[in-house]
Image (cartoon, rainbow, N blue to C red):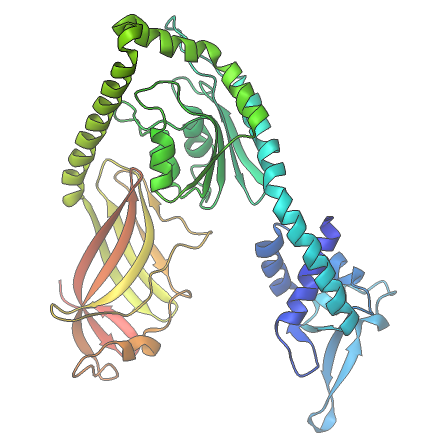
Length: 444
């Protein structure tokens, strides 16, 4: 489908979504642009033309003008269509989109075309972006240590747009995924993105470096498309498994491109195979693979146990400042040696024998940064996503809530954190004063 048809489909669907007693759905240009950006990608500057191009037999664009006696009279866009100031109809105040019967038929036809396009688009995208990753891999710069290294390229894509590209050695000593995600997109929201990597993301790195698989999990990437599994039998398949266990969808390059990646890395693959045969001999190579894989599993388990012990007393703090509908604030301090991302925040009543949610768990908006570097601390706020406390207090089955008069109770702030690719739950309890719909700190 061409872009104009996608926006036409959006506008007709928007008008059909909420019936309004035959008057059409009321809206304004700002609301339409926000909704269209979410559904159709960036469409700044396109919405006015899309509205102009709606055919009058498909949809009426109306303004309802108040008249004497409390009546409203419709004014059609057709009266202004061929005038120099036609844009004023949409940019000044609200207007209604009323979809007519032929418009319903047109919407159904466009919807069928859109579904067909969506069914074939992922395969086309994979072909396109996998090719880009291969071209990045060809730029790889190997370490000067006299042995072969893999050629690796990475491409980060979100909503069909390339956010970054990188290759191994683009920045000396760094993997392609690290450069693409952390060096080029450190301040960008990549949650929900797809990463195309010519080589399976690694699961082990020497401290303090973090494995690429952990970084991908930490940044909440939705999907990873891999060119080839790591030819090192000690870690082959572990990156794929780790990503899958974290709920990330994993798939592989189209066959012909996967073969191209294999050919591109034939020297590195041969080096890995020859290293095994040289060390243990061809007769024992299969046994060595099993032992090497077991050693890698044990090392990974030991590291996990070490991190679990460290996370049990994780050095982070959260101080709740205040709360009212639409305005909750608190100060988070990260005293750990890791980068920490807050996934969700939830407030619960913190009685010892009774706990009930006062707000639902909420994620940061795309415009907010809830990621903290080691040693960083700052105040964050959240609000409109939450239901006001006054609407949720009925969920708290307390014998004497007395919220309107004010009551001091404990609350529990529950934070779900992402640390080194792992999820960690931290709870912070303090006394607060509930007074009406306000929450105020109480005591030390």
